[in-house]
Length: 173
Image 1 (spheres, rainbow, N blue to C red):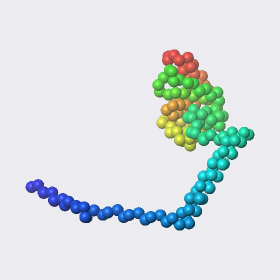
Image 2: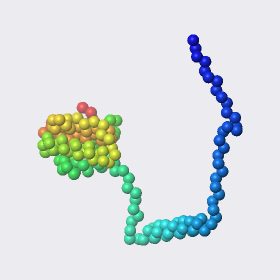
Image 3: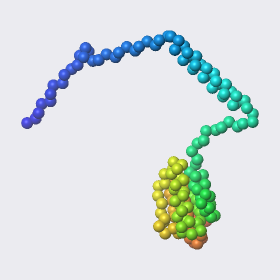
Image 4: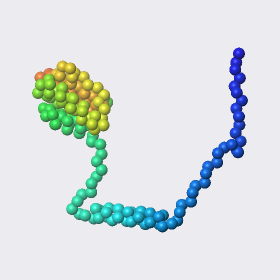
């Protein structure tokens, strides 16, 4: 057995609510004083802008934009005193990233803290890290930030793998 759909009721024009007319603005002294006050504010703003443009001793302040991911990473590395930091532009060599950064730490604990600080600073700047590998051992931590790939290693591990030589020459081995 199939159930019948209930008949729909059509509405007439008389049943649709009509919008209420808007109230007319009063043209009293309050409206005139508001217009005068607005004009005065606009005039003062224009005067301040003209004065700041004409002052030769001060530079105009530029709006601060979002710092680049590369700058955030390098600043975090400098903050935690990473050793022998190298930033390699690999745009012409590979499609996986734009910049590869290789840095060293003095101990496994230092390597871990450098990687953690970079993640912290990137999150504060609005960049999301995609992955982190090797933080358990601390000999080599790889941090994927999409546009920047960071390798933080102990000096002996860095010397053994020689990533700079691999990516610097542009030839994949």
